Length: 194
Image 1: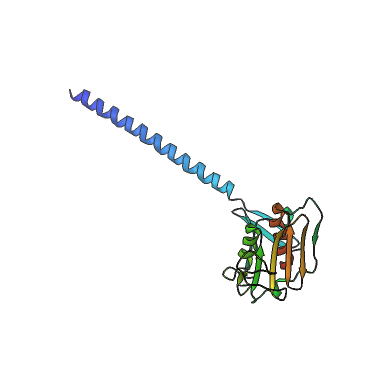
Image 2: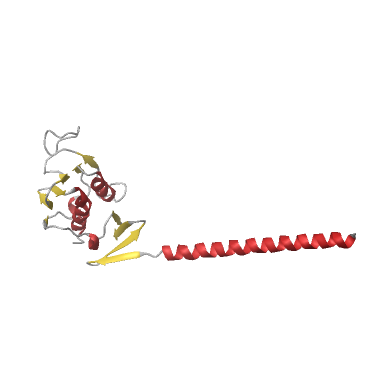
């Protein structure tokens, strides 16, 4: 009787050992496979353009200039337009915005966010504050009226694409699908990338 009981115990113990070993094997190779996959996906993409290095992080392009960190939806090499675009060469540099209020009127929320995330005083401490405003009376929004004596960015939909500056007003105009690229193009000009 003892032999039968000890055989059953040995067989049960052997089965437990085999199942336990199999589970450890599966877990080990699962962790190993996952870690190797993470290394492959953590590849850093970089783009060098006119001496500026853009690093892709989580789908955004990061440019670090001194203590400033700028975040873009596009890098300069991605910006191509299907038509002729009038980009003014007289865009004010970053220094003209330092410590002053910045006013913005935008018909495109994505482009407006692109301006906010790069000029926001909490992020880069470039401008004193950012505030919505209107350039002319009759603006649909209940916003203060400002002139081109103030730093003012106006983003509008238009059939022709352009980025122009008149006094301290910057006009970013284009088709809805091009406004983000035009906004990034403007920011590259301000930063001296282009």
